Image (cartoon, rainbow, N blue to C red; front, side, top):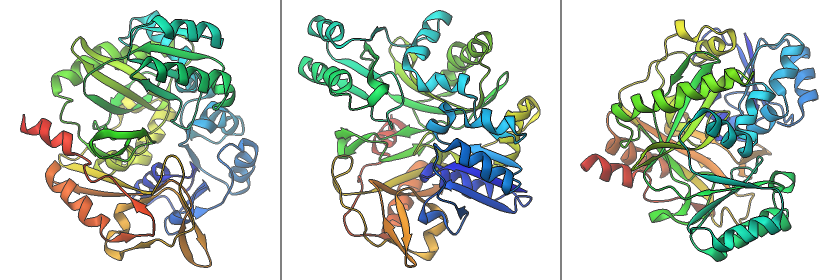
Length: 422
């Protein structure tokens, strides 16, 4: 069986490593992939947004199943295009992917169906937005409507920051068309939780919860990044809260998408805030999170391909989705200066004994050498019986990986351990 995975980061590497456990899968192709995946998949270099080339490749190589792991191709209709030529794919069609590709759509969906989220206002011109932030309650959150590589959200702690965020998106057009409309919403407080889930449009099965670490520096300081590390499970996410989320957020979202004629099939990601008024949705994603995938999939006991195929076929209710009882920690090793300015092209060495635990994101192969080629270079993961052991082991594994200019946070999981201690 031949599989192709669309995307090129650590998330895709984690998906590929998990798919490889299925003995029926004979070949995996990464589109575009990266140099660090070369031992686990055939790296093609075909762009994640080049839907036409993906379809051509799938037909020419007789691909049996495709996994569309990245947000852009999902929003651009990669699943629709593959389905049109008879190739089944994991992920939502373009209409369902709008739950992530448009913040305006997702906020209005939650409002219409009574799904708990932050209060918000929508603006399509800068002058109205600027007038609003001059008098609104601060802190406030400013979000570009469209996809912005995870960088379209500003948590403005001061009025000046809020004004700057509006100008950044709407006047400077830093996010291009994605910032032509913005959502300004109330600032929520409480522990954050990421819950990825499998959905076939009717049935939803949550994965193990996780906790991302977005800020660049220790103690949650510095600029927001795509994620500097993560742990699973999230200790704040209790069984009681999980039941409440299933009742008030998860199933209502699946049912809302059905009613809107956009049944969601694939991985539906819930970014949650556990507020004093109960859990609320911060954001939806229409795909696996990054770096959450690097701790969630290593804990998956069931076969990933079998589950993915069930979401496509509508048989998830009959499919086992089981996770191990242990814990996982992923430490992201980045290029110093990320997410602002950083240098690339340094050689990466990865110890043989930790190769299976490393998910490569920003790297390229050149003359047989693996070189850094991005801000987030790789994630180093460990799975152990408990969270403290997983964190300790992940940092031990980090010592087996080296490249010039390497930077990583030293406190991944620290907050989670404090929560466990009570």
